[in-house]
Image (cartoon, rainbow, N blue to C red; front, top):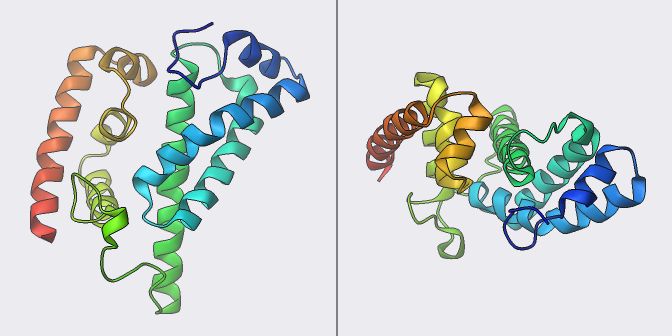
Length: 185
């Protein structure tokens, strides 16, 4: 069994899925699905949107399982995919709303979906977009730490940087995000 969080897949199941075992892949996707839903829900305010992002993430996991090299934890690899999927879903929803002139995104926060660190998850996503435009090099570390809850050492491994660089990037991102979120409140 790996050192992954409870509810994550054993290393042998991951290895079997990577080697092309369709039954193992199906079992693996069933095991990681609840965690992927939780990750996507941290970004997206509506259950349906989080479910859409989850489906996209699970497809990406299935299509790219052979690309998981074992460098870093499987949980970290899945976190990156789920985070990217949620962010792409948000951008797609925002673009659709902008193109149609009809907001697909709610005007006001639903108290059941209010983020702890932002006025709403929509505020958080807007601030993340601003951060990405302003300081793209810090986004991945911030997302993996503050929204993905990965340890600094694993983020360093995923990003190919030192722990010190990860800490610096997260600090820069948090400083930017605090200012951006204050501006929306």
